[in-house]
Length: 482
Ligand code: AMP
Ligand code: ZN
Picture (cartoon, rainbow, N blue to C red):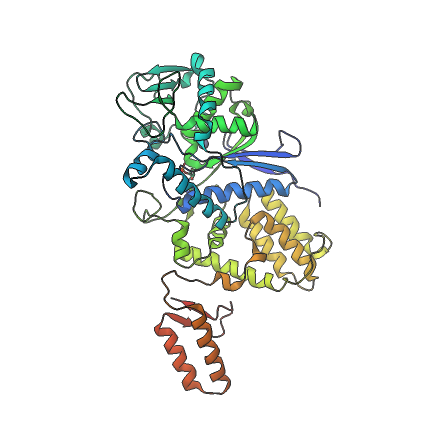
């Protein structure tokens, strides 16, 4: 199959560019990972579904993928710009646990959510594993680019060319988040190292040339990106909020460390392409982790939704568009996934054939390739998958191979799911599935004998237990829990 070149939107110059690997046959990607002081909300998970879709697309192009998602287990303050309390220590204190235990617990929860969303396995280095390298980095840039204040070692952003090119303009929000600390040379200067205040002890602190303390949050991504992928690497990703502070600061550190030149040559930033997913938003404000019961993947599962319905919801929107979460939207995504599964079930026993052997699939395959190559247009790619599934009078084995080829990129895992897996099953349901199936079997037998009184009685009995019987439902749900 002829390959369409992959074109991606580079936030650094706000342009679509053709992707050319820095190392032939390879793609190296770094994705800013979560701060593991709490559960992740589904907005955070959108960032990783996006990064995973990018990784899978690079694999579609035949590239060997190395993909890192770091784990921030130290250094992130309650504001991105060096102010407030340390997120890890604050949560540890409120739960009466050690910061290390908090980190381990929420990292495991995060990895469980990644697996549930079928995000391919990636490397997950933890910041605390790289403190020595962070100190070495600090030493290398300190003389030319930093100055010391009472509270730590600060990076002077005026010492590198084009600081803030990624952010373009300091937005109101960005400006509000920049700390006005006595002695700072520029408002945007940020901490490379934060000293533990005199008389205090932190759970997470290390000795350094600038006193006992902990690294600033931005440093870890520079250090781990360089250590694991080597500068320059191909693509750096994160949520759109990182365009304002975290990534401009990472870029400044990278310039200071290795490249010194300005950003008209993107590789001086440490990576060639910087990509950012837009936010998942929710009207009632349940996305915010400070709002008590916030929207976690577990909440979706508890309400009875299969996690892949959320992956489908993400894929239906372009990653650069804002996506509004609603339960109705999630249910629509689930229904769409179910229609796909019903079509795929018919292919279950077909032996897979080589992909491109049938002319009837040429159009959907080309549409799919073009869509994914066009800055990851997953919304169109999904319709190409549906076109392939709807193609009539073709060998089932070839259809199976075409669908597998597309699903390897979309990651919906269609062949491992059955329609029953997608049935909405709230955790609060009190009736067991066997009891429902048993009642439905008795009802079927009664109807076969034209005993409609019994059949209706069974139906009412089920309704009283929250089970709606769905006779003749075109999606074959048979029943649902309300
Ligand atoms: P954090 O743990 O705050 O660093 O966030 C982890 C990742 O999720 C980062 O890439 C954020 O940019 C991203 N993110 C945070 N909130 C949202 C949201 N509502 N929608 C999409 N991505 C988000
Ligand atoms: Zn980062």
